[in-house]
Structure formats: structure tokens, C-alpha cells
Amino acid sequence: MTSKSVATALTLYRSRTLTLEQAATVGGCSTAQLEKSARAFAPTPGEALADD
Image 1 (cartoon, rainbow, N blue to C red):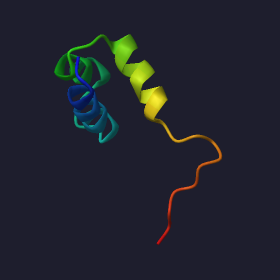
Image 2 (cartoon, rainbow, N blue to C red):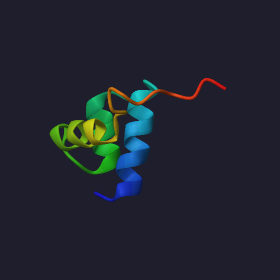
Image 3 (cartoon, rainbow, N blue to C red):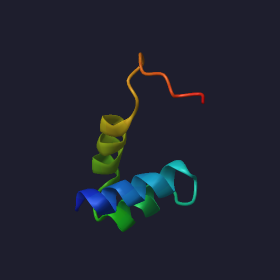
Image 4 (cartoon, rainbow, N blue to C red):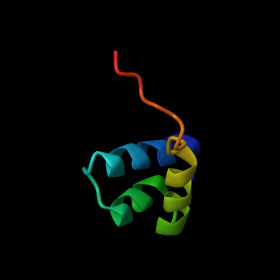
């Protein structure tokens, strides 16, 4: 499991291209590991997205 493969898997999962299970397979990790990574990369509650 490399950070690049996990990032790719998260991108595909978030874009609804893959299911969580498929994304975990692509990322070379378990669904639990992928979920944990997704939470780590999620925006914090106080973080606002730029609206430019």
C-alpha cells in the first residue's frame, strides 16, 4: 500500500467510480484501512472550501 495508490483509490471511491471494496483492492489495502485513510484526508469541520 503506497500513498499514491491509496490516494488514487480514494479519488475513485469519492467520485463514485468504484465501490469501497473495489477501491481497497486498487489501493492494495483492506476496506478498514481505506476508510481510515479517507477520514485522515477529510476536511476538518472548520475548514471551508474556496468558492472563487
